[in-house]
Image (tube, rainbow, N blue to C red):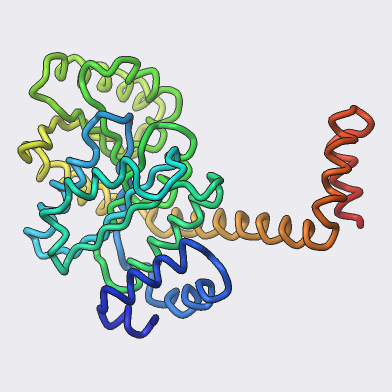
Length: 308
């Protein structure tokens, strides 16, 4: 299946991604075979509050890229949805005009029950799309919480989308999203309040820039994604950010940091699973009861469990 996916067979790619999402030995063997082919794609995260028009922006960005002959993988992530599909099904319907294009591959992912699992699965799907040759991978996340920050860490460039009249946008950015924003987009710029939103964001950027001389300054762009207005300029900003990362040496150092984080996460997951398998879940639940009854603290319990 790996050979077929590398040869461009879409059915093999779809099956391979399903395997990777569900984990297991077959998936890990496939990822090991694909890994030497990775490291070529530019991964772009798109996040922001629901209702800001992210899906439409992703759709229009993909069109701009295809117009330049660039192949595009799209991964739409919904950490809040307990079922496959849901709201994402609507997103895929809206992207129907791209679905027949062999240079575009769209995949929706819903929650697998844990943020850690979802972040890992998303990273693995990105690796598959990278390995089979998609030049740019757009990763769309729903919402503006910790899950988005986690998943955005897998991206080289992160676009944060705002819309006028949504309220508390600057507070939300101050709370953490601004830290991961490489490009800020005020979408639905034909609505009242767009200029005010852009000015508010500019104020926050200026406050941060005073302490970060020499670092990348996120541009603030206004778009009307529904008709494509301003979207080519968003892609130009993404390309400029990629060039900055390359020339500053940050591309390599950030890649190394991403690999280290991923390795530590996998080690934690593996060690936890092996410990649970060795000790037994019932025995662990006994410790949980003792901790809840204040008979023992979590550190002592953990040391006892690890010690056998």
